[in-house]
Length: 154
Length: 284
Image 1: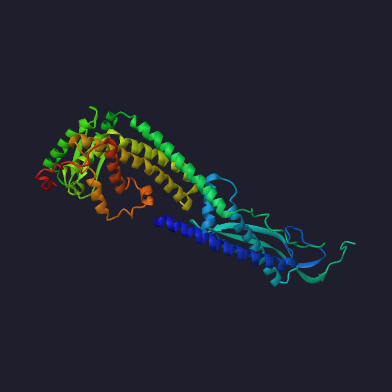
Image 2: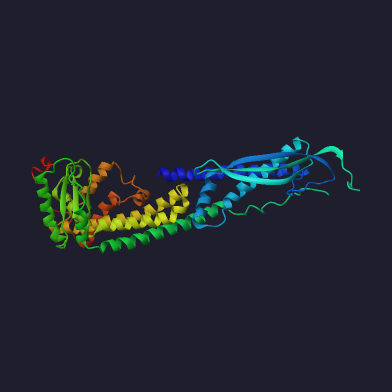
């Protein structure tokens, strides 16, 4: 009996606090994304050649824990197969937050753009409630002040 | 070249879903599947188990050197008395000739009696010492003989093993986490039903034999009354939840069932109680 009650309490608490934390996190992400749109993060490996830029590695990483409810739901999906939708928002938040932190670092070094964006992810910790880490990194391009001729070869 | 990051709409990488409804749907489906598989595996394997000839059980037990009588020396007088009761009850229970019953008196204080493979039945001092009269003891003895007669030990083992194997095969992918734990528990609870059904069937057969032996069923429910007292529970404290989780039916349910079966069959619930032999408690 105690086991069932503690399980239900964990499930309800996990759902309540997990949803609350998620809503808050999304609000913060959406606000910061608008704020940091001035620093484009580009997947391309080829930087603009309009002027000379200093290049610098910028990184942003975040570790987000799953809650009991999400993990339990994911475990149930594991039984049947199919998309583990309960983890989708967790990964979405982690990716976006990591990118924002990377942009924050880029802004701190005065970058105009961040190119060659890459993501890496790994699970941190073990046991029932594992957390995920997402690392976003790229090459920040900071104007060096030296202008480049339009047709350097002519 | 101009670069910009436009704000993309939400909901592309995250599927819109109601997590609670999703959980309830999956949970219900998983429970139904687990219960169904356990019930089918148990039904199949326990039926198969009952088809194994009794002599195979006996042959198997000849290789087992387990001392059912425990560390202490068993009382010869108690053993003889229990044997007498078995001899009186066996024809009433229609025990076939090929089924040989081996009684063991264990001086341990455990409040228990059980029937196991090869017709071995063990009575512990802890239980024997709590019984106030022969009618109660006869009910216990007849109950354990019925287990042997119904081939419950082999059916229980077969059904249990098959259910466990099916459960492990089903829940193996869910691991040792909360989901695996919950599904395994669900399977075990489903399995308990078979155990309770065996107990009810043994109670029913035993009551009929006791009625034939004494001409009434007075005192047959004494064991469950003693169990009730020992558990310290009241009828209000025994909940539906307890009934669902237990290997045996609730004590009150068994007492009520005895009264009901007696009424259905027109067996008298009033009659003279047969005392235990004078030196019974010295034999413990």
